[in-house]
Length: 137
Image 1 (cartoon, rainbow, N blue to C red):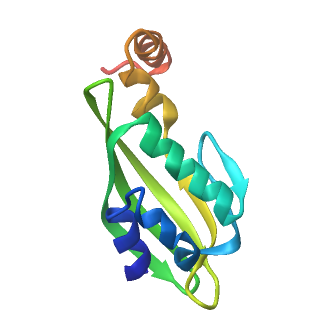
Image 2: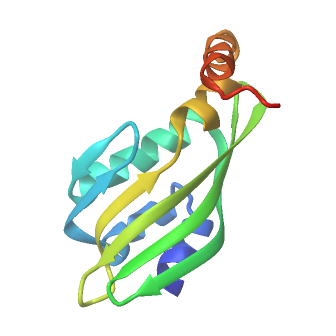
């Protein structure tokens, strides 16, 4: 897990060349926007991240592993149109016998962590959140 966490916290367009050392060739990846199979497809997701956002970086603050399954809690920081964002999330990794990632699933709340923070769209999501929230007494 140390190698995986180090790779994520130092992720760059250049470090993507090491993806086959981190992920199995047929690895499965799923997040709220993507579901792909294989290192080439996973690499495309990361390359798109570097193209679409400025200064993307992961900060890992907790890792729990039991056997071949690990959960990692992280903050994803990036700039979008010169505005700073931070998404809080958790990843579940299933590791192969050689320690590489066989299955990777990201969990994070797109509404609260992203959509509510965006101009225009955020207003609608914040109003919906207020409408569905239990009133405080």
